[in-house]
Length: 215
Image 1: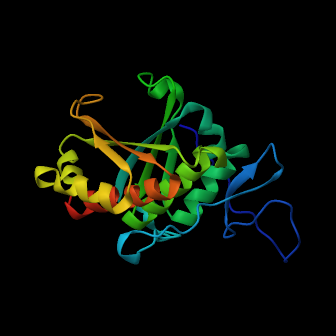
Image 2: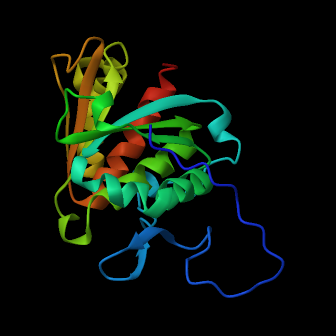
């Protein structure tokens, strides 16, 4: 498990520093461009709602889990230099966050498993931050979100006679699918494909559906 355990630095004043402080609109550093990478903007959802910018501070102490698959080549952008990306997402979203080593999920050689644990709002915000970090700007028109859900939870996403799945597609104008077959024992894959704002709006509703089901 790749995790950053550094404590918050202590400071005696408001001295200037080159790295962006937690709380500014960023999720890491663009090492090639030598400039801060900006965080995902607020995204309008159906009905005028917007994803939360930060989860409860104690969200990482409990709550449910959300499991994502991200491109293996994007792991470094998510983790950040010396784990700074992970640390920032944890602190801003109030979640527990892990990026598993490749040997922990050998069935996906081209992907890495990201596990989020915390409150609903914290996980929604963290999913947005992870996706934004995983896909560079030039790929924002074709983002591929991949979530693992338990087979028993998949029905909450699909809804009665596929009604919830259809509603998410129509509200977000994005392709959303739930695989019929298990990707590994007891788990099914939920995917959303499209432009970044639409995909993040869909992820917001997918997690909301799972939460509302009580699963």
